[in-house]
Amino acid sequence: MTPAKTSHKQSMANKTALIITSIAEPNNFLQALARGCREHAFEFIVIGDESSPPDFQLDGCRFYGLAEQRSLEFQFVHKCPTRHYARKNIGYLIALRDGASVIVETDDDNSPKQGFWNERIRRQCVSAALAAGWVNVYRYFTDAHIWPRGLPLDQIHSVIPGFETLPKLDIDCPIQQGLVSDNPDVDALYRLVLPLPQEFRSDRRLALANGSWCPFNSQNTTWWREVAALLYLPAYCSFRMTDIWRSFVAQRISWVNDWAILFHEPTLRHDRNTHNLLLDFEGEVPGYLHNRSIGEALDHLNIIPGVDHLGDNLKLCYEELVRLKLVGEQELGLLDAWLNDIDLISQQ
Image (cartoon, rainbow, N blue to C red; front, top):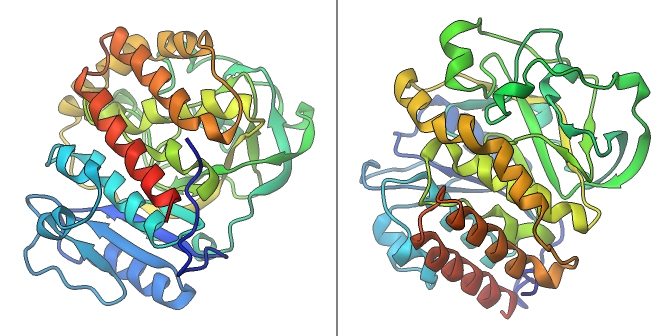
């Protein structure tokens, strides 16, 4: 498949879109994000679901309830289950159709720091971890004993190379994970037994290159248009793993294209919505048990370099996750719809 290209009617130059899925009223977080989008010329797209307020109104925001979504031209809209975070994919498709060159995503319980609105720079000269295996990136930003959601539990005590020993490289980072302050993205096990809030230092950036794994989430993540196909969030898996398993697939495909994943200073503050931690724990069990083996399985796949092969590589990765019985077979039809929509956008 080919990367999504701009419409002849619209320019992609420096056009940034912010994507959220939400069933909330226009709360303080959404209002702050909308205000920032107005001030910094971001497109702001909110994707609703069955429980969304029917009269959602927020200046500076384009809200798509289910009726508006179903009027769209995308195949994906009609195949994706409702009441699911994977409907966020619809927001990505809208942004791409409308010419976004950069897509930023977050959630409706995050408030932006000033740095959140800074221009995103794709190519970075930063310290980089090469062929390091599983890396607890959080330990580069704090001395606290903390790890990101999705890190294999047998890696939470692993020693990481000293930051000062890492080479500094000029490296292409079309996927960038910003950290969040106060209530960072940690798993239910951490939340049940260890302290919050936690803060991260703001004077470091780190790129994970070929052979270095770390889960990243969908709370504060930037994607350039060239890698847009990799935005795909799977629907037929554990809700607590959808963005984590997406991150493993994206990392594996990135390696063969000489792309790195950038982790950078916190630019959002997280005031987490109410969660049932035991239900979160239950949803994370597939990850606790299988995240390491997922990495091993993806590592053995014959991933082909080149932007034109992103779609084929995605299918190969998800076929493997289906074979491992971690993702349902229905995912493959949904993925086909996603890739068809991406191709349709590229032809406009």
